[in-house]
Image (cartoon, rainbow, N blue to C red; front, top):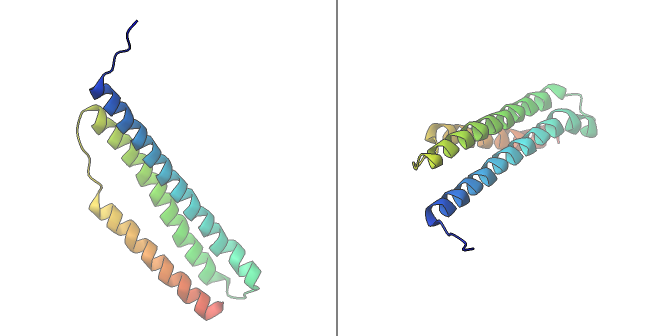
Length: 120
């Protein structure tokens, strides 16, 4: 019995497995951001004993939107990349989506810092 080595098929399998790991990273990142949303929006004002709950809730909502966006885009992209790999094609990241996610992350980071300075 001889082992057959199919370099093309083996490379495709490795690429698909790498794509799967990337999808899982998108999901972990989105889940982490959703945990931050809960922490900022619900837990932080209680721990701080703050009477100003609405800024925390607004910021937590922003993080929740970011988390859902990351999970949604990750799922969509994972599916598209798998189809592209199976067809022997390449799929670039969507620059607009990545810019939007990046800008929203920066905005939320600055807002978090401001919230800490003002109410912390």
